[in-house]
Image 1 (spheres, rainbow, N blue to C red):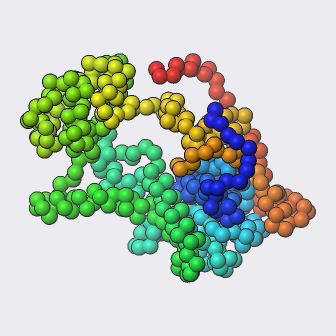
Image 2 (tube, rainbow, N blue to C red):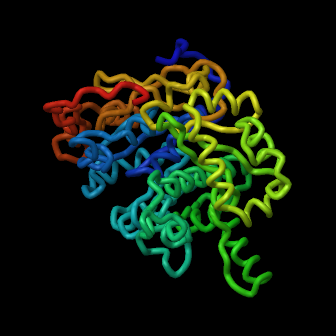
Image 3 (cartoon, rainbow, N blue to C red):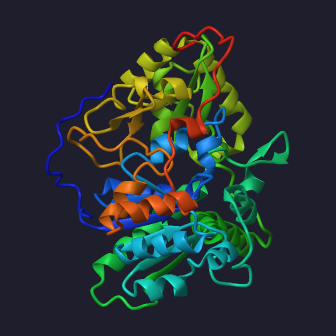
Length: 423
Protein backbone atom coordinates (compact mmCIF):
# COMPACT_ATOMS: atom_id res chain seq x y z
CA UNK A 1 0.00 0.00 0.00
CA UNK A 2 1.07 3.61 -0.44
CA UNK A 3 2.87 5.24 2.47
CA UNK A 4 1.26 7.83 4.71
CA UNK A 5 2.39 10.14 7.48
CA UNK A 6 0.63 10.96 10.76
CA UNK A 7 -1.95 13.74 10.68
CA UNK A 8 -0.51 17.22 10.80
CA UNK A 9 -0.70 20.67 9.23
CA UNK A 10 -1.38 20.47 5.52
CA UNK A 11 0.05 23.34 3.51
CA UNK A 12 -2.05 22.40 0.48
CA UNK A 13 -5.38 22.88 2.31
CA UNK A 14 -6.45 26.38 1.26
CA UNK A 15 -10.11 25.68 2.06
CA UNK A 16 -9.54 24.58 5.62
CA UNK A 17 -12.24 26.13 7.81
CA UNK A 18 -14.80 26.21 4.99
CA UNK A 19 -17.94 24.09 5.30
CA UNK A 20 -19.51 22.58 2.18
CA UNK A 21 -22.87 20.82 2.14
CA UNK A 22 -23.40 18.23 -0.57
CA UNK A 23 -26.84 17.00 -1.51
CA UNK A 24 -25.64 14.91 -4.38
CA UNK A 25 -26.02 11.57 -6.03
CA UNK A 26 -24.14 9.57 -8.64
CA UNK A 27 -21.11 11.53 -9.94
CA UNK A 28 -21.32 15.26 -10.76
CA UNK A 29 -21.92 16.92 -7.36
CA UNK A 30 -20.03 14.24 -5.35
CA UNK A 31 -17.04 14.69 -7.66
CA UNK A 32 -17.09 18.46 -7.14
CA UNK A 33 -17.20 18.13 -3.37
CA UNK A 34 -14.49 15.49 -3.53
CA UNK A 35 -12.19 18.11 -5.04
CA UNK A 36 -13.22 20.70 -2.44
CA UNK A 37 -12.53 18.14 0.28
CA UNK A 38 -9.08 17.47 -1.16
CA UNK A 39 -8.46 21.22 -0.98
CA UNK A 40 -9.21 21.16 2.75
CA UNK A 41 -12.90 21.97 3.03
CA UNK A 42 -15.12 20.17 5.52
CA UNK A 43 -17.66 18.37 3.36
CA UNK A 44 -20.89 17.04 4.84
CA UNK A 45 -22.64 14.61 2.53
CA UNK A 46 -26.40 14.75 3.08
CA UNK A 47 -28.38 11.74 1.88
CA UNK A 48 -32.04 10.73 2.08
CA UNK A 49 -32.94 7.70 4.22
CA UNK A 50 -32.74 5.60 1.05
CA UNK A 51 -29.14 6.69 0.49
CA UNK A 52 -27.20 7.89 -2.53
CA UNK A 53 -28.00 5.74 -5.57
CA UNK A 54 -24.36 4.62 -5.72
CA UNK A 55 -24.69 2.93 -2.32
CA UNK A 56 -26.48 -0.03 -3.91
CA UNK A 57 -24.93 -0.40 -7.36
CA UNK A 58 -22.54 -3.31 -6.77
CA UNK A 59 -24.16 -6.51 -5.48
CA UNK A 60 -26.52 -4.41 -3.36
CA UNK A 61 -23.70 -2.40 -1.81
CA UNK A 62 -21.55 0.68 -2.48
CA UNK A 63 -19.81 1.10 -5.81
CA UNK A 64 -16.37 2.48 -6.53
CA UNK A 65 -17.90 5.97 -6.76
CA UNK A 66 -18.53 6.03 -3.00
CA UNK A 67 -15.03 4.77 -2.24
CA UNK A 68 -13.23 7.09 -4.67
CA UNK A 69 -15.22 10.30 -4.21
CA UNK A 70 -16.69 10.20 -0.68
CA UNK A 71 -13.65 9.47 1.45
CA UNK A 72 -12.80 12.46 3.61
CA UNK A 73 -16.46 13.46 3.95
CA UNK A 74 -18.86 13.25 6.88
CA UNK A 75 -22.23 11.64 6.31
CA UNK A 76 -25.65 12.80 7.50
CA UNK A 77 -29.00 11.28 6.57
CA UNK A 78 -32.00 13.63 6.57
CA UNK A 79 -35.52 13.14 5.27
CA UNK A 80 -36.23 16.48 3.61
CA UNK A 81 -39.80 15.39 2.99
CA UNK A 82 -40.53 15.75 6.72
CA UNK A 83 -40.85 19.27 8.18
CA UNK A 84 -38.59 18.26 11.07
CA UNK A 85 -35.96 17.00 8.63
CA UNK A 86 -36.10 20.14 6.53
CA UNK A 87 -35.66 22.21 9.69
CA UNK A 88 -32.49 20.24 10.52
CA UNK A 89 -31.18 20.73 7.00
CA UNK A 90 -31.80 24.48 7.14
CA UNK A 91 -29.96 24.79 10.42
CA UNK A 92 -27.06 22.89 8.84
CA UNK A 93 -27.22 25.15 5.79
CA UNK A 94 -27.01 28.25 7.99
CA UNK A 95 -23.57 27.06 9.14
CA UNK A 96 -22.20 26.50 5.62
CA UNK A 97 -20.16 28.47 3.11
CA UNK A 98 -21.15 26.43 0.07
CA UNK A 99 -24.10 24.25 -0.90
CA UNK A 100 -23.88 22.07 -4.00
CA UNK A 101 -26.42 19.64 -5.37
CA UNK A 102 -27.39 17.90 -8.60
CA UNK A 103 -31.08 17.30 -7.98
CA UNK A 104 -33.53 17.67 -10.85
CA UNK A 105 -34.77 21.30 -10.92
CA UNK A 106 -38.34 20.43 -9.96
CA UNK A 107 -37.18 18.10 -7.19
CA UNK A 108 -35.09 20.88 -5.65
CA UNK A 109 -38.09 23.21 -5.59
CA UNK A 110 -40.39 20.51 -4.22
CA UNK A 111 -37.98 19.72 -1.38
CA UNK A 112 -37.53 23.39 -0.48
CA UNK A 113 -33.85 23.62 -1.43
CA UNK A 114 -34.09 25.96 -4.42
CA UNK A 115 -31.84 29.01 -4.63
CA UNK A 116 -34.41 31.37 -3.12
CA UNK A 117 -35.21 28.94 -0.27
CA UNK A 118 -31.55 28.62 0.64
CA UNK A 119 -30.83 32.35 0.35
CA UNK A 120 -33.52 33.06 2.95
CA UNK A 121 -31.70 30.72 5.34
CA UNK A 122 -28.17 31.92 4.57
CA UNK A 123 -27.84 35.08 2.41
CA UNK A 124 -24.05 34.63 2.10
CA UNK A 125 -24.27 31.03 0.93
CA UNK A 126 -22.67 30.08 -2.39
CA UNK A 127 -25.39 28.03 -4.05
CA UNK A 128 -24.25 25.69 -6.83
CA UNK A 129 -26.64 23.58 -8.87
CA UNK A 130 -25.21 21.04 -11.33
CA UNK A 131 -28.09 20.15 -13.64
CA UNK A 132 -28.86 18.80 -17.08
CA UNK A 133 -29.20 22.22 -18.71
CA UNK A 134 -28.40 25.69 -17.40
CA UNK A 135 -30.58 28.74 -18.19
CA UNK A 136 -32.44 28.53 -21.48
CA UNK A 137 -35.51 26.88 -23.01
CA UNK A 138 -34.46 23.44 -21.73
CA UNK A 139 -33.49 24.48 -18.21
CA UNK A 140 -36.13 22.25 -16.60
CA UNK A 141 -35.37 19.24 -18.79
CA UNK A 142 -33.54 16.21 -17.43
CA UNK A 143 -30.19 15.09 -18.77
CA UNK A 144 -27.53 12.61 -17.76
CA UNK A 145 -23.92 12.20 -18.84
CA UNK A 146 -24.72 10.17 -22.00
CA UNK A 147 -27.59 12.52 -22.90
CA UNK A 148 -25.07 15.39 -22.82
CA UNK A 149 -22.77 13.33 -25.06
CA UNK A 150 -25.63 12.78 -27.48
CA UNK A 151 -26.58 16.47 -27.51
CA UNK A 152 -23.10 17.91 -28.11
CA UNK A 153 -21.68 15.74 -30.90
CA UNK A 154 -19.51 13.36 -28.89
CA UNK A 155 -21.73 10.31 -29.30
CA UNK A 156 -22.07 10.78 -33.05
CA UNK A 157 -18.28 10.54 -33.30
CA UNK A 158 -18.08 7.49 -31.02
CA UNK A 159 -19.75 4.52 -32.66
CA UNK A 160 -19.53 0.84 -31.83
CA UNK A 161 -20.45 -1.30 -34.82
CA UNK A 162 -22.04 1.77 -36.36
CA UNK A 163 -24.26 2.56 -33.37
CA UNK A 164 -23.71 5.87 -31.51
CA UNK A 165 -22.50 4.89 -28.02
CA UNK A 166 -21.50 6.58 -24.79
CA UNK A 167 -17.80 6.92 -24.04
CA UNK A 168 -17.91 4.77 -20.91
CA UNK A 169 -16.48 6.93 -18.10
CA UNK A 170 -18.74 9.78 -17.02
CA UNK A 171 -16.43 12.51 -18.22
CA UNK A 172 -19.16 15.13 -18.69
CA UNK A 173 -20.28 14.61 -15.08
CA UNK A 174 -16.72 14.97 -13.86
CA UNK A 175 -15.94 18.00 -15.98
CA UNK A 176 -19.18 19.62 -14.83
CA UNK A 177 -18.10 19.01 -11.24
CA UNK A 178 -14.69 20.51 -12.00
CA UNK A 179 -16.26 23.59 -13.62
CA UNK A 180 -18.44 23.92 -10.52
CA UNK A 181 -15.33 23.96 -8.33
CA UNK A 182 -13.71 26.63 -10.51
CA UNK A 183 -16.79 28.86 -10.21
CA UNK A 184 -17.01 28.27 -6.45
CA UNK A 185 -13.34 29.14 -5.92
CA UNK A 186 -13.69 32.27 -8.05
CA UNK A 187 -16.65 33.36 -5.93
CA UNK A 188 -14.79 32.66 -2.67
CA UNK A 189 -11.93 34.81 -3.96
CA UNK A 190 -14.23 37.70 -4.89
CA UNK A 191 -14.72 40.06 -1.92
CA UNK A 192 -17.42 41.92 -3.83
CA UNK A 193 -19.42 38.86 -4.88
CA UNK A 194 -23.05 39.72 -5.54
CA UNK A 195 -26.13 37.60 -4.99
CA UNK A 196 -26.00 36.69 -8.67
CA UNK A 197 -22.34 35.66 -8.35
CA UNK A 198 -23.23 33.35 -5.46
CA UNK A 199 -25.81 31.48 -7.57
CA UNK A 200 -23.95 29.10 -9.83
CA UNK A 201 -25.65 26.97 -12.47
CA UNK A 202 -23.53 24.38 -14.27
CA UNK A 203 -25.23 22.39 -17.01
CA UNK A 204 -24.02 19.05 -18.32
CA UNK A 205 -25.11 20.26 -21.75
CA UNK A 206 -23.15 23.51 -21.48
CA UNK A 207 -20.18 21.53 -20.17
CA UNK A 208 -20.40 19.34 -23.27
CA UNK A 209 -20.56 22.39 -25.52
CA UNK A 210 -17.40 23.83 -23.99
CA UNK A 211 -15.56 20.52 -24.25
CA UNK A 212 -16.57 20.25 -27.91
CA UNK A 213 -15.60 23.86 -28.71
CA UNK A 214 -12.54 22.86 -30.76
CA UNK A 215 -14.52 20.38 -32.86
CA UNK A 216 -17.47 22.74 -33.27
CA UNK A 217 -15.12 25.49 -34.45
CA UNK A 218 -13.34 23.00 -36.70
CA UNK A 219 -16.48 21.92 -38.55
CA UNK A 220 -17.42 25.59 -39.05
CA UNK A 221 -13.94 26.25 -40.42
CA UNK A 222 -14.19 23.37 -42.91
CA UNK A 223 -17.70 24.46 -43.96
CA UNK A 224 -16.51 27.97 -44.76
CA UNK A 225 -13.32 26.86 -46.50
CA UNK A 226 -14.74 23.92 -48.43
CA UNK A 227 -18.37 24.92 -48.77
CA UNK A 228 -19.51 21.77 -46.96
CA UNK A 229 -19.38 20.44 -43.38
CA UNK A 230 -16.49 18.09 -42.81
CA UNK A 231 -15.43 16.83 -39.40
CA UNK A 232 -11.85 16.28 -38.41
CA UNK A 233 -11.32 12.62 -37.68
CA UNK A 234 -10.17 11.54 -34.25
CA UNK A 235 -6.45 12.01 -33.54
CA UNK A 236 -5.33 8.49 -34.42
CA UNK A 237 -7.33 8.50 -37.67
CA UNK A 238 -6.22 11.98 -38.70
CA UNK A 239 -2.55 11.07 -38.24
CA UNK A 240 -1.50 7.66 -39.57
CA UNK A 241 0.77 5.84 -37.14
CA UNK A 242 -0.80 7.56 -34.12
CA UNK A 243 -2.83 4.88 -32.35
CA UNK A 244 -2.88 1.41 -30.81
CA UNK A 245 -1.08 -1.54 -32.39
CA UNK A 246 -0.87 -5.16 -31.26
CA UNK A 247 2.47 -6.78 -30.44
CA UNK A 248 3.46 -10.36 -31.24
CA UNK A 249 2.52 -11.51 -27.73
CA UNK A 250 -0.99 -10.04 -27.83
CA UNK A 251 -0.40 -6.83 -25.88
CA UNK A 252 -1.32 -3.41 -27.22
CA UNK A 253 0.95 -0.41 -27.48
CA UNK A 254 -0.15 3.15 -28.17
CA UNK A 255 2.26 5.16 -30.32
CA UNK A 256 2.65 8.91 -30.07
CA UNK A 257 3.34 9.85 -33.68
CA UNK A 258 2.12 13.42 -34.10
CA UNK A 259 4.84 15.08 -36.13
CA UNK A 260 7.18 14.34 -39.00
CA UNK A 261 10.04 14.09 -36.49
CA UNK A 262 8.07 11.48 -34.52
CA UNK A 263 7.54 9.48 -37.71
CA UNK A 264 11.24 9.56 -38.53
CA UNK A 265 12.14 8.34 -35.04
CA UNK A 266 9.57 5.54 -35.21
CA UNK A 267 10.74 4.19 -38.56
CA UNK A 268 14.38 4.30 -37.46
CA UNK A 269 13.75 2.72 -34.05
CA UNK A 270 11.93 -0.25 -35.60
CA UNK A 271 14.22 -0.45 -38.65
CA UNK A 272 11.20 -0.08 -40.94
CA UNK A 273 11.63 -0.14 -44.71
CA UNK A 274 9.86 3.24 -44.75
CA UNK A 275 12.73 4.94 -42.86
CA UNK A 276 14.00 7.81 -44.99
CA UNK A 277 11.26 7.38 -47.62
CA UNK A 278 10.74 10.88 -48.99
CA UNK A 279 7.22 9.97 -50.12
CA UNK A 280 6.19 9.55 -46.48
CA UNK A 281 8.30 12.21 -44.82
CA UNK A 282 5.48 14.77 -44.55
CA UNK A 283 2.20 14.27 -42.69
CA UNK A 284 0.16 15.46 -45.68
CA UNK A 285 1.76 12.70 -47.76
CA UNK A 286 1.22 10.05 -45.11
CA UNK A 287 -2.46 11.03 -44.93
CA UNK A 288 -2.77 10.43 -48.68
CA UNK A 289 -1.26 6.97 -48.20
CA UNK A 290 -3.03 6.18 -44.95
CA UNK A 291 -3.60 2.48 -45.65
CA UNK A 292 0.04 1.92 -46.57
CA UNK A 293 1.28 3.70 -43.46
CA UNK A 294 -1.11 1.89 -41.14
CA UNK A 295 -0.18 -1.49 -42.58
CA UNK A 296 3.54 -0.70 -42.26
CA UNK A 297 3.27 0.31 -38.61
CA UNK A 298 0.98 -2.59 -37.79
CA UNK A 299 3.42 -5.07 -39.35
CA UNK A 300 6.44 -3.47 -37.69
CA UNK A 301 4.96 -3.62 -34.19
CA UNK A 302 3.60 -7.11 -34.83
CA UNK A 303 7.11 -8.48 -35.36
CA UNK A 304 8.08 -7.88 -31.75
CA UNK A 305 6.93 -8.87 -28.29
CA UNK A 306 5.83 -5.96 -26.14
CA UNK A 307 9.10 -5.91 -24.19
CA UNK A 308 11.15 -5.98 -27.39
CA UNK A 309 9.13 -3.18 -28.98
CA UNK A 310 9.24 -1.10 -25.81
CA UNK A 311 13.01 -1.40 -25.61
CA UNK A 312 13.50 -0.31 -29.21
CA UNK A 313 11.02 2.58 -28.94
CA UNK A 314 12.59 3.82 -25.71
CA UNK A 315 16.06 3.70 -27.21
CA UNK A 316 14.80 5.62 -30.23
CA UNK A 317 13.09 8.36 -28.23
CA UNK A 318 9.60 7.44 -29.44
CA UNK A 319 6.63 8.29 -27.21
CA UNK A 320 4.47 5.28 -26.36
CA UNK A 321 2.65 3.45 -23.59
CA UNK A 322 1.07 0.07 -23.17
CA UNK A 323 -2.72 0.09 -23.32
CA UNK A 324 -3.24 -0.84 -19.70
CA UNK A 325 -6.14 -2.90 -18.34
CA UNK A 326 -7.66 -1.33 -15.22
CA UNK A 327 -6.44 -4.08 -12.91
CA UNK A 328 -2.82 -3.29 -13.79
CA UNK A 329 -2.88 0.52 -13.94
CA UNK A 330 -1.66 1.03 -10.36
CA UNK A 331 1.28 -1.36 -10.80
CA UNK A 332 3.30 1.23 -12.67
CA UNK A 333 6.12 2.99 -10.75
CA UNK A 334 4.76 6.35 -11.97
CA UNK A 335 1.43 5.64 -10.25
CA UNK A 336 3.21 4.57 -7.08
CA UNK A 337 5.28 7.73 -6.71
CA UNK A 338 4.84 9.59 -3.42
CA UNK A 339 1.69 11.70 -3.31
CA UNK A 340 -0.22 9.94 -6.08
CA UNK A 341 -2.19 7.34 -4.09
CA UNK A 342 -4.22 7.43 -0.90
CA UNK A 343 -4.88 4.40 1.31
CA UNK A 344 -8.60 4.08 2.02
CA UNK A 345 -9.96 1.40 4.34
CA UNK A 346 -13.66 0.61 4.00
CA UNK A 347 -15.58 -2.24 5.60
CA UNK A 348 -12.47 -4.25 6.22
CA UNK A 349 -11.22 -3.89 2.65
CA UNK A 350 -8.18 -1.90 1.59
CA UNK A 351 -8.13 0.41 -1.42
CA UNK A 352 -5.56 2.61 -3.10
CA UNK A 353 -7.35 5.64 -4.51
CA UNK A 354 -5.64 8.16 -6.82
CA UNK A 355 -5.03 11.48 -5.10
CA UNK A 356 -5.98 14.94 -6.34
CA UNK A 357 -3.23 15.95 -8.84
CA UNK A 358 -0.43 18.17 -7.59
CA UNK A 359 0.31 16.35 -4.32
CA UNK A 360 4.07 15.68 -4.07
CA UNK A 361 4.41 14.80 -0.38
CA UNK A 362 3.13 11.71 1.46
CA UNK A 363 -0.64 11.70 1.75
CA UNK A 364 -2.13 12.35 5.16
CA UNK A 365 -4.72 9.88 6.46
CA UNK A 366 -8.33 11.00 6.22
CA UNK A 367 -11.84 9.84 6.94
CA UNK A 368 -13.01 6.67 5.21
CA UNK A 369 -16.19 6.90 3.12
CA UNK A 370 -19.05 7.38 5.59
CA UNK A 371 -21.80 4.85 6.05
CA UNK A 372 -25.28 6.28 5.54
CA UNK A 373 -25.82 8.90 8.24
CA UNK A 374 -22.70 7.85 10.11
CA UNK A 375 -22.07 11.35 11.50
CA UNK A 376 -25.70 12.39 11.95
CA UNK A 377 -25.63 12.45 15.76
CA UNK A 378 -22.24 14.19 15.85
CA UNK A 379 -23.32 16.92 13.43
CA UNK A 380 -26.63 17.51 15.21
CA UNK A 381 -24.82 17.93 18.51
CA UNK A 382 -22.49 20.47 16.89
CA UNK A 383 -25.55 22.34 15.60
CA UNK A 384 -26.87 22.63 19.15
CA UNK A 385 -29.40 19.80 19.29
CA UNK A 386 -29.76 18.24 22.73
CA UNK A 387 -29.60 14.45 23.05
CA UNK A 388 -33.33 14.26 23.64
CA UNK A 389 -34.04 16.34 20.53
CA UNK A 390 -31.78 14.13 18.43
CA UNK A 391 -33.45 11.02 19.82
CA UNK A 392 -36.86 12.43 18.91
CA UNK A 393 -35.71 13.23 15.37
CA UNK A 394 -34.39 9.69 14.99
CA UNK A 395 -37.67 8.29 16.32
CA UNK A 396 -39.68 10.42 13.87
CA UNK A 397 -37.51 9.31 10.95
CA UNK A 398 -36.51 12.90 10.22
CA UNK A 399 -32.87 11.85 10.45
CA UNK A 400 -31.23 8.46 10.28
CA UNK A 401 -28.14 6.52 11.31
CA UNK A 402 -27.39 3.28 9.48
CA UNK A 403 -24.63 0.70 9.61
CA UNK A 404 -22.84 -1.32 6.97
CA UNK A 405 -25.67 -3.85 7.03
CA UNK A 406 -27.99 -1.30 5.41
CA UNK A 407 -26.24 -1.63 2.04
CA UNK A 408 -24.33 -4.87 2.40
CA UNK A 409 -22.61 -6.48 -0.55
CA UNK A 410 -24.23 -9.77 -1.45
CA UNK A 411 -21.92 -12.70 -0.70
CA UNK A 412 -19.95 -14.03 -3.64
CA UNK A 413 -20.53 -17.73 -4.22
CA UNK A 414 -18.55 -20.04 -6.47
CA UNK A 415 -15.92 -17.35 -6.95
CA UNK A 416 -13.90 -17.90 -10.12
CA UNK A 417 -10.15 -18.41 -9.66
CA UNK A 418 -8.12 -15.23 -9.79
CA UNK A 419 -6.63 -14.30 -13.14
CA UNK A 420 -2.84 -13.84 -12.87
CA UNK A 421 -1.69 -10.26 -13.16
CA UNK A 422 -0.84 -9.37 -16.70
CA UNK A 423 -2.84 -12.21 -18.23
